[in-house]
Length: 98
Image 1 (spheres, rainbow, N blue to C red):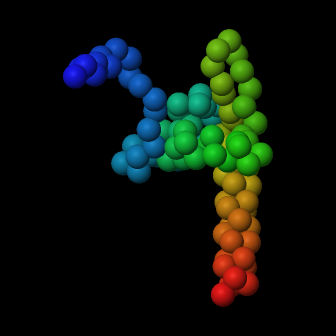
Image 2 (tube, rainbow, N blue to C red; image 1 turned 180 degrees about the vertical axis):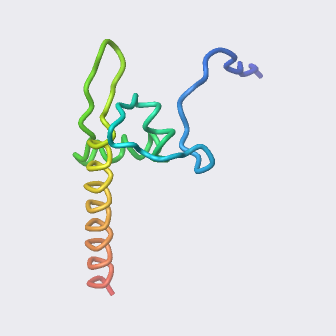
């Protein structure tokens, strides 16, 4: 049976654990990893929302992506409204199916 190798270099993907979160300052520009850490919104949630057409206003410099704090706060509000509407539609469909 082949042994799997453990990754030993690099910090890996940023994670969004509540113990690590602080807050989003609207006057600060964040990297993708920085906004994930500060907001608690995971990379997976960002990808799922992007697949549904809800994206922050990223801008690129070289290979890195950035977003202003104010734009990310507006994105979080749009995402919350989108998810609330999605849950309401799902509840309506579930009630209709009963």
